[in-house]
Image (cartoon, rainbow over all chains, first blue to last red):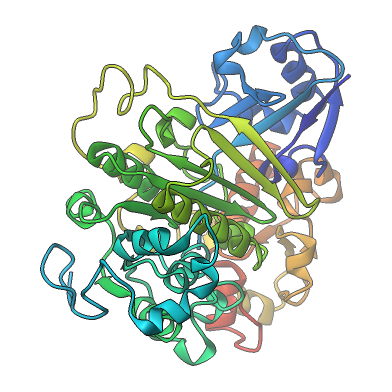
Amino acid sequence: MAKILIPTPLRQYAGKQDTVEASGATVGELLGALTAQYPDLRKNLFTDEGKLRSFVNIYVNDEDIRYLSKDATPVSDNDTVTIVPSIAGGR
Amino acid sequence: MEGIAATGGLPADGPSNKDALSKEEVLRYSRHLIMPEVGMEGQLKLKAASVLCIGTGGLGSPLAMYLAAAGVGRLGLVDFDVVDTTNLQRQIIHGTSDVGRKKIDSAIDTLREINPNVRIDRHETALTSENALDICKPYDIVIDGTDNFPTRYLVNDACILLGKPNVYGSIFRFEGQATVFGMPGGPCYRCLYPEPPPPGLVPSCAEGGVLGILPGVIGVIQATEAVKLILGKGETLSGRLLLYDALNMRFRELKLRRNPDCPICGDHRTIHQLIDYHQFCGVPRQPAPEPAAADGEIDVTALKSRMDQGDRFVLVDVRERHEFDICRIPGSTLIPLSELGRRLGELDRTADIVVHCKSGVRSAKACALLREAGFTRVTNVRGGILAWSDKVDPSVPKY
């Protein structure tokens, strides 16, 4: 089981948890398992066409999957997957 | 832009000699001067430096105060807002007696008291596509302390077009992000996030709340990066996104790369001038005028008269529990929007259901959800409990 870190703005769609464990051999499978468990997360992570939204970045450990193999990036049990959406607050 | 000229000319205040420190300055900066990483050389670099602080709010407050104290020679401030009581929980450059004043005036007073040697430029305006290049141009470094996506993309693009570092920070509830964009060969904000979220999907601090101390931590990190850039010392956050989680007190960092396909800093630039950032972010430039009560909506005075007439209906409050604890409308039942989907069974599908929240946005979503689930008699309370406090019962506190 890899660990997925859920950012504050999305916790309301993930049972208010900051960390969720899920299984999957790739990032795509892992996020599939995550959104199957928490369906409300789906529209916040993916477009209607199933594409990862462009204001959400996914990191395996400290690497952005856009510079690895995107959805096909392999994930192993000890990896930490971090979801980092864009936030704009400053005042 | 009023007041002190931002472009060229003699400083309107502060010492004019950038090549030496006065006796007072030597004493003031003594803890810097005795440190080899700063020393006289570094302190003179700080004195010769200019930094533009966009926003004097949560992030802008601490960062401008520390940069003034550190002896940055010239600070530009951009703000057009007025100090509000809800600002005081975190915007420490403003005090209780400043409520109602222009933020920029209140900020300048605080900074002058901290360090009268600093030249301060007053830009009392919103940053726009028309003025951003002119405002940013005279400064060595730009610091983004704004609170909305259009301005963040605007600041990014202006900095890339001008070739200036953009010290970035942003906050939400207990979580912050910081990095430095726009360094030679380094990534920019568009490399990190090519597009903004559609309006409404990511809550702002005004909607989601923010721990008052959080902008202090992130703002001071931004100020630290600016000072390091000026001194040319250490390793900046360029190429690294720092994530701070105050609740678990964890700092993490993720790798950031310049995107070769980035439309503004990539190998083939397609954005050559500032664009319409409100359109890019899909948000209206001006808040839309309040619409007349649409079908399926009532205003708070109509709600009150229905109550007074003894009408039978169920009043559902879809705010969160912690908001219900602050204030409530008598007779309401709490079902937070986040729980509504799985608690539909608690409501009678044939009943007359009136839904309210804080301002009317979440309750409109709740009404849509209920209608989709087959409820037919659903009404949204326009303006929510804030309007209730304004127009029906002023004893209900606003938050």
